[in-house]
Length: 316
Image 1 (cartoon, helix red, strand yellow):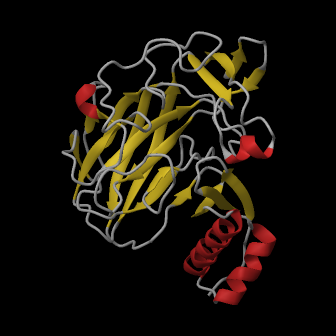
Image 2 (cartoon, rainbow, N blue to C red; image 1 turned 45 degrees about the vertical axis):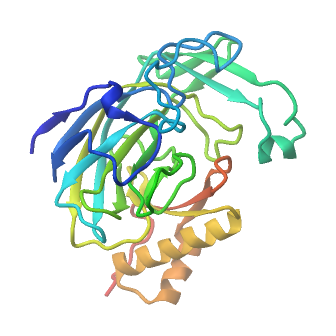
């Protein structure tokens, strides 16, 4: 095991997923990755009130390739091959001292439904107090901080440059607030060396990301451990968090996403406890919560949570 430091610079940043891009770094299975990230919108400094598109942005941004979130990657993990699983342990997420959030300023399904799709953007600037773990907006709102990365994913199998915005089987823009330090995210691998991408710091976000953004922030320090799991052959992301096991569902239709997360949880319970499918489904009704991960990225997300120790029985 070694520590691999990845600098924050033009050569390590990208705004799309692409499985043919040259890796910005190479690590071995079990190595620790240390890096920092811009906020998802490529700011170099805190925006100026009252708009999120104000302030200084990263000047080296290439619009043809960097039209999505500002991400570090791809990071090659030696030994990872298509059909395996990459385990990404989240060891530390330390945000910068500022962030921002916005609602509106464009036509989106959730703003159209609420009748504000033609109105100007509403913007909040945030100071982040990392000692007290609270954020304070320029209007005086105070919220607790819960820093996590909105985007952790590997390169999808499809050819070409792909958007960073919708979540996929390869992970990506999961926007799952449970993925805090102490968690491990398991990602199915679709191409050799996995090609890991990380970024899109969130200082605080509720389940659903209902307004369209979290408190978007740079991350001053990200520490991850990448490990290849050749014995696992999962087709969708899973996570083991301090709270419990998580399975995911993604679809434009929230109900379909819910059923996918349910199916994945049923399969997980079958594997954990060696029970039959109907017994596993019955246990989900008693022990598993479903939460709306986000509704604002076109492809909606649901995650199902099985708390540790919730089910105890002398299983076979």
